[in-house]
Length: 65
Image (tube, rainbow, N blue to C red):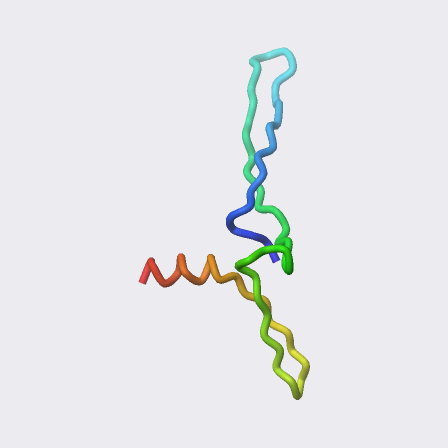
């Protein structure tokens, strides 16, 4: 699961002799799961299906409604 709030910026240099072109690429980090205070799971017993959630992302969706 990717975290929508932890990002890292990668600085990519794309020009050797022509022009000094640089590009910033933003990537979402991997969720740190049990270390994150917003992360929680639910387990459905008969089938043992575990679903992962992010409380912070759910709050953002509620604000948009």
